Picture 1 (cartoon, helix red, strand yellow):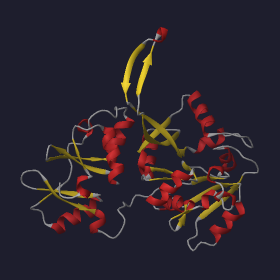
Picture 2 (cartoon, helix red, strand yellow):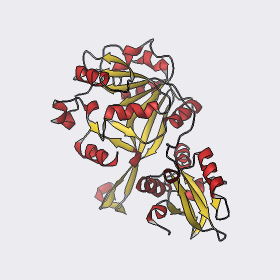
Picture 3 (cartoon, helix red, strand yellow):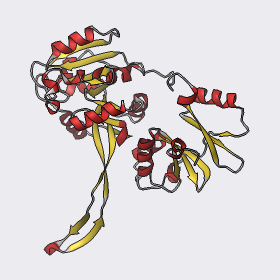
Picture 4 (tube, one colour):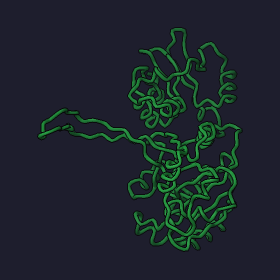
Length: 351
């Protein structure tokens, strides 16, 4: 292959969906070139994978089973200015260049051609509730001094990184549930050059992972996001909202595809302790709750006032009345959790 950067975005059509998802994390691209041998076959996007997972397709299936029929590529005969214009118009992450033998001879990457971020004009102006009232005990002793939302990530705090992610897609109204060291947070945000539109809702006592949202009754009348204050997700939230609406969900949670590799032979036993099976170094895949949700406004009425109430309690209530709870998948590498020291240090290296 031409170079390592291009090599990392190329996969064979026979590899599994899960392997392709992992390759996206490795390459830090949400689009991959699918090859048949050494020839170009199709393009695979993160959207293709997410739609397949939502439909219940096994992640052990080969990627060729979920590919779209048509994908746009450039040829060695195309004028570069036309290719660049097409990329800009379509917001392509990259554009492979194919020769007459159908082999990939080059790839034009967005970041190499354009100064601005790759974005579309679609905007959604939904309220965002940020749960920022916890003590951050897992990050002591740092959180003895400053509240967890103000822990620095690069030249910003984790709180600013989260809010900027929402502002990029048009969300400008923030509600912040606060308790621990609230005064420090309020002062810090008031001193920023960039002023966020924030309304604080103060918990007089801990109300759980969703209980403080009861304080927003009659203040929110549209679907709204809820986000923990210690995570960053590399996902366009507009796609999550589109899925939420199209699927007519009451609640949608973003889930991360988490793979756990067991480096031992796993034994299955039956009656009398007799071995019934052996799996050598299996890999199990799970969906992990990332702590970011979309809720319909009617759900606020189902949250009791002044009581400890967790998101799992709300989910149980929705399920009990046969409501709809959707799960929108992202890759493991797209979910960054700052709640513990190892993950925080890893996030510092990435962002």
